[in-house]
Image (cartoon, rainbow, N blue to C red; front, side, top):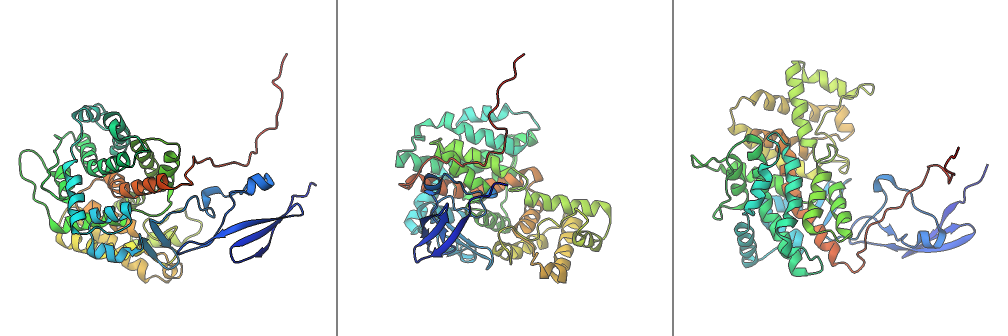
Length: 438
């Protein structure tokens, strides 16, 4: 049996680590960020050893340097540019958070007014895009329409796609933030077969989205302030979440020099995956299933505890947050406020959700495993309660995450060490062989 060459850690010094490989000592720098884990700089690993690091899912690999978002999953900490999410949720708005993520600092009053004005006055889209959307099949999924339409923006706004030009990058970023609610609402209206509602420059960001979603030309739409606050919160809480799958997709697409609209469309495509952006939709589907069966909450809780049963309670626990999801604690209060105001046909579903939440929070099995309700549990209930249909849940998620994607794209292009992404592989296929001849 052939013995593998052993790579051993010999010592960790203040700013470097020494590895032993094939009787050769190699030194690699240890990098320290402002918060979080240290990183071993292995960029020269292959050139020095012809050996690759194997890390499926990138669970132990830092793909970039970033100053945008910090997460400590064990302590339940989420920071946007150093500001705790709890403080931003209480005092800020989605557009102010958007400015913060993009520029690194909170805007002063004048800067915020200018930013809001730019976003409001550029929310219209080219009329050719309206015809483009009308070309989709009548029952097309809104996410499919959104991916196609955002990608098509580069065909209509190609005057801002020179990624080497900082002004072009800024213009395209503003266009994406301002036009995303319009596109989201158009996707929904096309699915319903209702007339498109034009944006209103005199309405703030979230009220404008709501009137485009739920308004009709024949009557005035009245905005509910609790709904505005809840939806604004959902957008803030989903604005960024570090190097998740969709953000990494945007960075990887952008590393090739692709235009910003193509990069964001790639991010939306990644978000559409049920393991990423579909969690809050899965919560409502689970609750609906439980309600339809007529079986008790206790029955399904016991199923979730049974290791031999594939059933899982959706919206509990989180891959990153091993203690509690700080976003869930913020949005829970607003979820209850929305539910207290409603008396709809969905009330049995919401009553079931509250019963499930209470029983899980009191159950030792879930408490010991720290399987608390996460942000998707409450955001799914809120979206359902305010009338957003299931097939629009991920569209709203994409709207919120849009500015996070933009911020990471802008940050990546501003770095001197920016280069095209090229993950390597461990080849396990056939060795070289000859084509068979007769």
